[in-house]
Image (cartoon, rainbow, N blue to C red; front, side):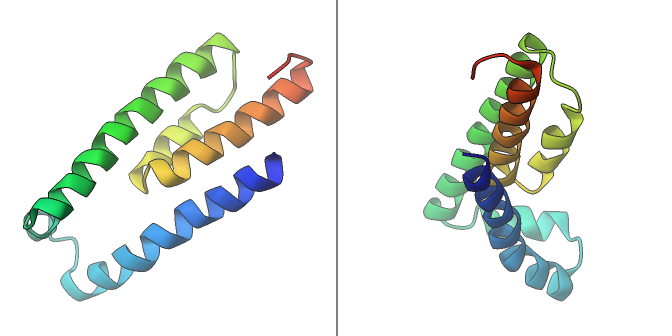
Length: 107
């Protein structure tokens, strides 16, 4: 499973950034424009609402599960939420699986 989590983490980093970096280079860090464009159509507002709720759910999972199994470096997947849940979740699952395998606990 670790290789799958690694591949998903890479995809979760690369795919969103291939869309954001060109926008950022064209507009700079123009937050009002970003919010306006992100919510300018119902379908884009739908997608962003989904990402927001997913991000909150992933943050809760990271904190609750990470504390429960006494995982180190929980800050890393939490910081990766800045890119998105598509990076943070598979990275957390990878770190969780590695932690469980080294601590002798079952996943």
